[in-house]
Picture 1: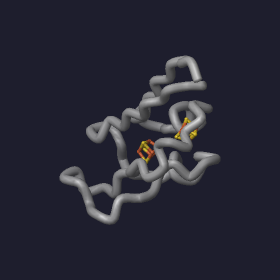
Picture 2: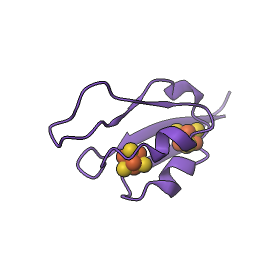
Picture 3: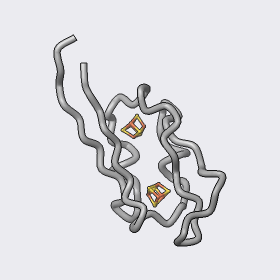
Picture 4: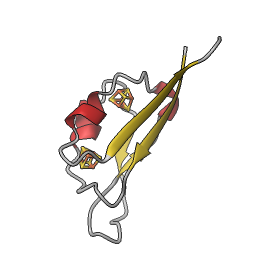
Length: 74
Ligand code: SF4
Ligand code: SF4
């Protein structure tokens, strides 16, 4: 079992939505509010469903996502 933390660097994110589209478990949704940088950031709505596959991290064009995963005892 993994304990996962999802980090989104809001300064790097340009709101392209790739992470929202590619996540197999629909962990992200698009924010309904525009950020101070003028983009719709992804928000984590189902963080508990993240399986640490790192698809979002690997496909983010701006290196704005970092997945921190630790193996933990059940
Ligand atoms: S893929 Fe990266 S730049 Fe695009 S919305 Fe997600 S975090 Fe932001
Ligand atoms: S690591 Fe995988 S499951 Fe977790 S948010 Fe990213 S794409 Fe979704």
